[in-house]
Structures are given as C-alpha cells and as structure tokens.
Length: 297
View 1 (cartoon, rainbow, N blue to C red):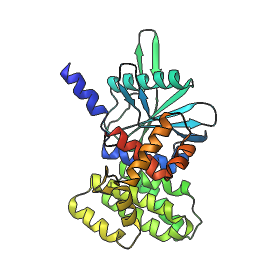
View 2 (cartoon, rainbow, N blue to C red):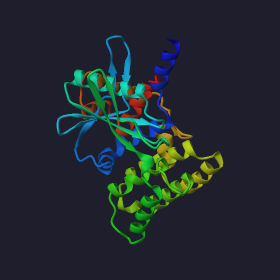
View 3 (cartoon, one colour):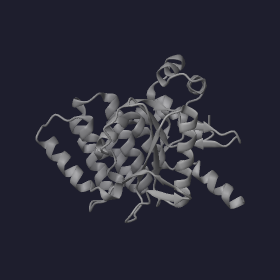
View 4 (cartoon, rainbow, N blue to C red):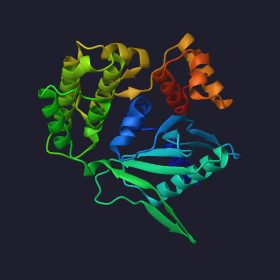
C-alpha cells in the first residue's frame, strides 16, 4: 500500500523535462503538432487538473481543446511506457471524456532509450491504445544540418522550421547534447530579426532549460557565456527559471494574479477571459498551472 502511494506521488511530480515540454507546448504547440504530423487545429489550451470524487487529483501533462470538437491529451515520458502508465493514461482519458463530454486522443512523447514503445494494452474485452512519438527515432544531426543550410542560404524561416530544433536534445545523433544546444543558440542568434523578440526568448529559455538538465556545470557555464548578450536573462528572472528549473515564482502582486487566473479557470472561464481578468501573459498563466501542480501556489 505504501509503495503504491509513493508511486502515485512520484507520478504527480513533474521532471525538468516535463516542465520544459509543457512550456514548449504552451508557446509553440500548434507548430509542434504540425511537426508530429498532427493536422488538426488548437482552439485553446485546456485544463489539466481533474478533481476525482475521492479527492484524488488527476494531473495530465498537457491538454488542448481542438477546433475539430475533441481534446488532445499529451503525456511526456522519459522512461519506457509501462502497463501501469497505460492504465493511468486510460484513467485520464475516461475522466476527461466524462467531465467535459468530449472524445479524447492521447499522444505520448517519449525520449526513453528503448527499441519499441508500448502503445496498447488489452484488458478484458477492451483494447486501449495511445499514439506514441519516439523522439529517439529522430536524428538531431540531420535536423540541425538542414536548418543550418537554410540559415546560411539566407532563407526566410518560420516557427515550423525552428520548433524541431528545440526537441533535438531529446533525439538521437552523433553530436553531443552540448553541441546541439550551442548550434541552437547560434541559429536563433542568426535569425533573430526574422521573428518576434518574445518568441526568440521563449526558444532560448527552452534550450537553456534542457542545458541545465543534461549538461555538466562547466558546460552550462559556457552556455551562459553564449547567451550573456541576449535578453534571456530577463526571461529567466521574470519567470523564475533558474538552473534548469521552472519552480520559481514571483511574490506579491504576480502571485495574486496567478491565483486569480486559476480561480477563474476553475469557475469555467476560457483561458483568454481568465487571463484578461487576472491581467497576466500566456507564459505567466502556464507557470501558474505548473506551480499549482507542484503545490507551490
């Protein structure tokens, strides 16, 4: 019994990889979905906290309400997908569908070093399936080489071109994660004038957080020197991203605004309306959700 409770508690604590993927989904979700071959369209970011009648919190990693009339549910896994994971995903789907009265599709983004991912389980007369995307099946070197070629040719790029680069630290390849992240920062520097400054800062923050997760202290120090002349430092300070963690929070007025936003969402308001009431940005709203999951807000 105690072991089961510990496993449930562990599943509720997001890893650094989970946190950065949630930020990426919030900022560039439609582009990521396009890269994954999913051609449907996001209507809004949907709630990820479901309250069970037994006072259990069902905390999904990320949800979208789709314009096509259903929800897309995303789970981020850095380890192999187990039967226990599949049962947990199935439970999430059941309550999402029942609570919001919508069909639900679950996609699992997995970066585990395994040859084959589990995508279905058979229990009784039912077979439950999820979509799986194995990031280790994708080659980071190929993606970065093609992107660098476009940059050197002076091509006009879009977010669809850059988003795959943000996921390269989770992919396979001959280059080290340090080299991939350095290439990423170099590319963002070269194309910064083609994009909104806010989008560039978000992408830099994602790469920086992966650096803090995967690299040594010395390598992170060198990365800091690379980004020292950018505006990333401002973003890290404002959103409490330090040493690869999205755990910080601003005190006083911003904390109150986050709570107001979460209360508005709980009352059924749309994300847009809740943000207007709380007077916060999309990034702050995403951070509020993460902090609430961690029990820090």
